[in-house]
Image 1 (cartoon, rainbow, N blue to C red):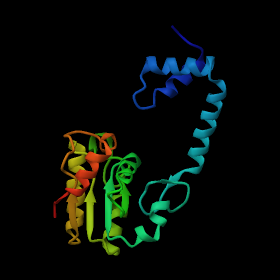
Image 2: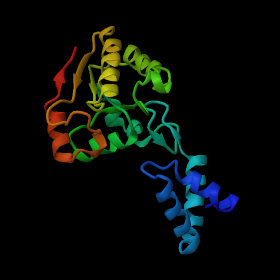
Image 3: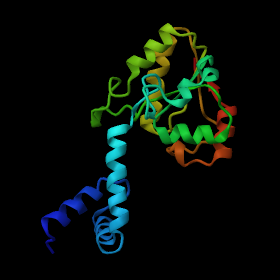
Length: 200
């Protein structure tokens, strides 16, 4: 069945959301149009405002409404000699929720995947290397997921750190193979953080 062009566009737009397929997109679209028009307008406004007002922190690349995010702006964090490298802002939040880590972060916004056109440049690794070169960093904690892409990314970054004689550790204990960091419960992630192992 063919819908009107505006409805088709709405359905197609909703399909970009994670886990939303054609049928789910149709249900959401008709739900918004039938019963949730006020909520739909609020959603539209919130998305537009976020796209206009949210940028990436100049230091860690996490989402922020300022040039430097609240974590990087913290004087306590600035004095830390540790950087924890994560793939996404959701991973950062998961680690923050454990309360086990009080250092700095670097958010890759993805993992190395040449087939998808994601290389070192897309992950901001030139910025990370600049920080390792110019700042007093003693430990680089690699908190990427234990997937093929996560392991390849961790190896690549550890090779960069080795050039500057920086200790590299990796979360290990309690992390399921292929699992996403953000979906692991806080207790397990906390143990993984405490039991991290040295790579270099």
